[in-house]
Image (cartoon, one colour):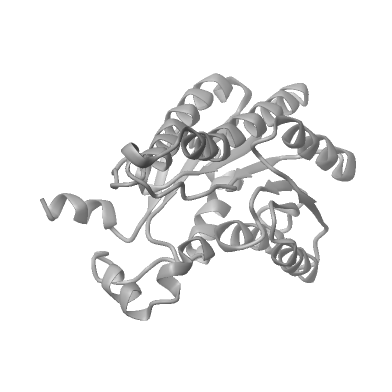
Length: 258
């Protein structure tokens, strides 16, 4: 259908997993896409190749989203290369230290907050400033998690970052509504990605965890990409400030287990 024909999208952390799936889906729908990576250059190159195979132009950049000047460069380089930017997907993130608070260092906490929250803040601000200069319009999609709502032990840094990103998104949606800039979250549940490599390599553990999901399977990056396409397209023009959980009913099941 080419629902994104003529659009330019930035997808951070698109060297693998959810980010890669979103970048490729956007290209299939007609967008030129900027791919960013932190360390997996080979993965980013694969995503770029898939974008080009879909008949679209791509740009690959090594970016550390915790560093404000690099995020500013990301936006300026995108505009210099493609002449504009219409869609921003903040997907780059880490899963945190996975430690109880009493063992978590300040450095652990700071690293997660800087990556999962500040990175989105830097890019959203630059994107919104540019879109305002262009007269408005545009789409921002932040990838949060079911953990913006439900908590997990040993995840204080991650839970705090995702919960904060939820309220940041809602606030930004209010501020940008008059400019017709849509700002929404996608909250994935159990998605099979390289971030969950320990589960991927243990078939029994994967089956056990999937059994707890009402839909009786884990999700895949391509599932998330379909929702991200909707939120990037004109179909979602009257949608802003919302989180779309994609979890196979996992959050509903959490309540049922109490």
